Image (cartoon, rainbow, N blue to C red; front, side, top):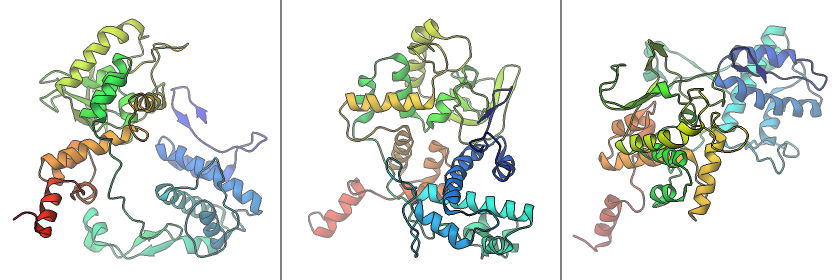
Length: 384
């Protein structure tokens, strides 16, 4: 990890003698300034350690070697791949991580094989194409002209979409608000409950991002709202996942992701600001601060927020581990229920990129929904 003078971070891979791995560095520089650089760096470290153990290089590695590696980290491959590479306490990659690893490896070897003029056989195998799907054509401008799309032969095929996202336990929101110990923590629970904020976006908020009065000068939303802005230089390293353009002119933020703010959120905000924030804040301008320890008053991190929710869930004796993303799933699901399954409402409430995804994941009744119970009881003959 390299920290620049403006506070931004870059990631590369170095050898034990502190020399930079030239191949990895050349590839990772393509993602300078994006969150993908960090993710790909960690995946490459894992792969290159395996590659050293296997005695392979970019020039000698084969496609079957890469398939064996994917099997060793958790993919299902129809071949012997030796001992699992990730052993306890490490866990095999999940479906999402396997897809990221496949994309990283394909990009890494295509880039370096072409740049160095080596291993043309591997390059030709990885540079695969497929026919465009209807979804591909719908996403593309002049999609009817597309004849092929890039494919990744390392990626798992036909992975099932998780149709039942992990929700909060019943009664979790009021129970958590009673279980927390500070005004800051109560505000975090309230803000996660009433919006679809991701934890990186919440812990990355600055005070200037909050427009908590009607008719804010940004003229982008008449009601109280907030702007989630992707910043590379937050001192707590919190980053918003989505990166729409934003700017600040004369002290007013415009752009970014916009979320409506409820009256309960505003009440929790003022309770926090007039007590703990006023007492401990150190002038950095970020919303959430540490309330104890040697760094009291400094920005509070996303990992610390996750830990707070986990401990509050244990105190409240709620089943399972309470995770911030469950709030996002919960509000989208609740919005769909109250909007008669309209995916556009769920899309807007959750700031989702696709109404189709919302409809596929949240647009079906569960086993206890009134619609499902009513239909089933009629089939059973218990109701007319």
